[in-house]
Image 1 (cartoon, helix red, strand yellow):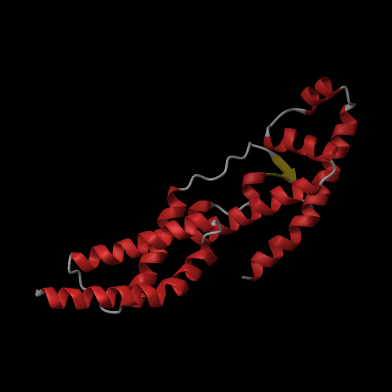
Image 2 (cartoon, one colour):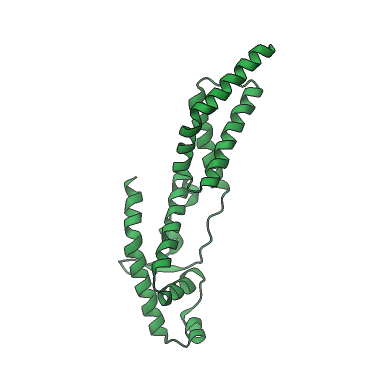
Length: 189
């Protein structure tokens, strides 16, 4: 291939990157909540494009190819990312059944959309926890997330166990109410 032909292909590649950068970034950003991670994935996609170009791999429709690579990189990203640790904690649902908090969240293994939903719900839960009164938040976090027993908490704080149970119950009710709207919003998607 002549130098002129290579220069023309490089120019076309540069134009393609310029034309598709914003659209591809928006596509990735909708699926990856962290902006820095989205930018890293965008760079990986463009790296793959340049690599394919240098190896003279056939790319029929460049735009479709870019979005396919982006989907694959997003999937890889969520496969590699470890789920945020949660203690083997339990929550009681409306029917009185005890569920592990882990059961209430979508599994990250179900794909990038489920991993995104999981991340968004965890972020919403962190925000909701910050809104709780300090006493309720402390009991909820200590019991549900850190896995500490009520007996241990009562001994440490010199607060009656029934008081601790009531604080946790109010925290669960407030969190359920606060997170229900977030949950419903994601179900509509």
